[in-house]
Length: 389
Image 1 (cartoon, rainbow, N blue to C red):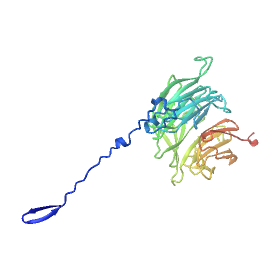
Image 2 (image 1 turned 90 degrees about the vertical axis):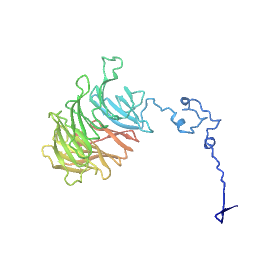
Image 3 (image 1 turned 45 degrees about the horizontal axis):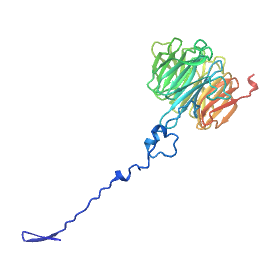
Image 4 (image 1 turned 180 degrees about the vertical axis):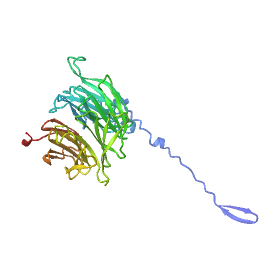
């Protein structure tokens, strides 16, 4: 206690001294001297030095050996019944894809593949342009064209990949890829920003011949091409709008085939029949998010010819036409239904919970449908319908 005098007044003041102790965190949390791991490249299979920090975890090398990944995302078949399959690695920070070629689907492995290719990014969609040309839509917005078979280039092993060309005409990843059956060297793609491109691989390179900003105000979800003509295609969106395109026009042009004024429909996919299939090539089929399949006649626009309920739960994710049969695939939950289409849709096959997520399908023959997805990677669906004979 200190007494001070100021102008005849006395007052008391306390002086306190505090001592600051510095916590040396750098010493407390420093790496122990006993932690002396080997070089980063040798940590992958070392159990004596567990990963104690992010650097050690990042030092583990990814397994980049060719293999069939768990995510089966796309499948395609040419007229010679040769299959192309795309699988993707979708775990962790780095995603990449693998594609394989097979002449059968009973036993698909890395060793018995006719050709295989590992990509630096995911393989979104693949489709055969013709028997020897494969179109591949990558996750980095590129479209590639690969030659898959050539006796001239390699007589001993004719199944070999050769890059014909690639282009990145889209600004967003491709979400739809469809080939014109009447002109297999021509294909059309769409992307997430509703841009549409028509491609030609008949020459020595892959080139874009038609580019248009699709006349859709909602997300474009479905694409189908005419089987009889190489000039017409159909697009649909989540807002219940379907448009018919003619690629012969010098400038991008489309006409409204249907527009839902009630705003209750939401289209999810599309299919176009051949002249000898279902009710003929004047009819297109649209799936929606309520599990229904709608029929449209391109000669009578803005009118639904028929609406059939396929799924009580889940949305129609894909439609495939095969002769008199229409196969509809659903997600959330997954299911497969096949109907014989005439005046009515007569369901002859149903399979539920086929995959965790169904991604693609292809008709192997008149009575066999193959579906792929996540979970159960490949499933075979056989139908027995004597009425179609």
